Image 1: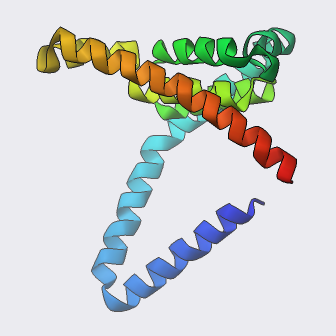
Image 2 (image 1 turned 90 degrees about the vertical axis):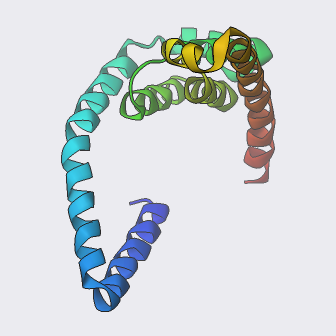
Image 3 (image 1 turned 45 degrees about the vertical axis):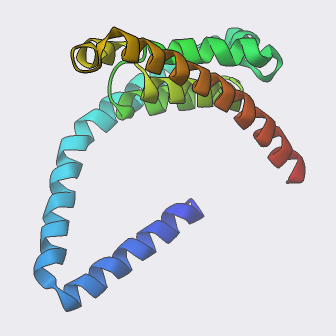
Length: 167
């Protein structure tokens, strides 16, 4: 099991134990809220995991490595950022997809760019932004966000390579 998960579980359990002693009603409300979130999330998680498993089998690793792999450089990172623009769905769908891209040999910087552009832009949210912010603000925000995703992907790829060499 992952050490980070174990650590987070221990901190959470300690938090509940302390809260149960000091303010039991808050601990009980937190527990009830957590159960409600779990019940709502389980169907999304299950469907997403099955979809990600299928997607991982459908991805052509050679094509992913060619177009989004470490050798694809800035072009692959830019392509991944553009893919993130059309990302729809919840994080329960997109995160497993991103993990599938990593498993199919996409560069970590490309996956970073994909995730960042999906979170910052996502074309499906633009119609909701336009009435509130107008075309000029929305267009500039979209362009800057896309550039941030690409620059972040390049920076992430460089840092990832440096970090890997340190290990």
